Length: 170
Image (cartoon, rainbow, N blue to C red; front, side):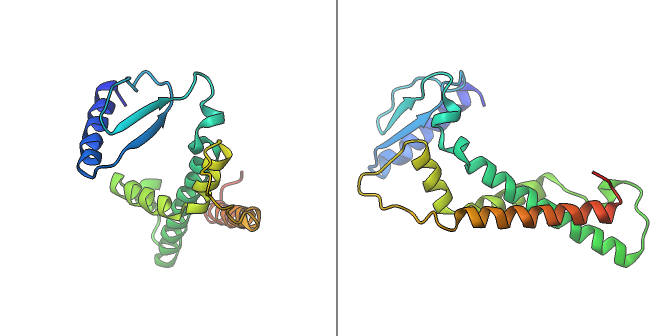
């Protein structure tokens, strides 16, 4: 990200919000690529220096949750590729032959993984970072720990299967 690209993006979405007659407050970190510009429909609020990990909702678990789903999807694709190769009994010269994964595949997997991140996860991460809406009702946190443990078990199981199929010791 460069300051110029970020500013172009900001001006572009500012025009969109102006047409929609919306006012937006955008919280961003103090990165040099984030220039301080005045916009009609977007108010920029910069986080104080050296506190991004405490105040940014993405750092409170959204990124980790997204990465979990992305890795799980990639592992699933590897398992399918290994299963298909095992069924055909064709030897593999290299890993890219076994598992061709293009930039388009990465983008599609990114889109799917982001779709798996639940709204409640995002809302809870914002709440944990201190963003609270006064009339906001508490989201149900009851099953979140169990869901996280279940997702981790699925991931570990898939990872173990891949290492076993590939004959790799970890």
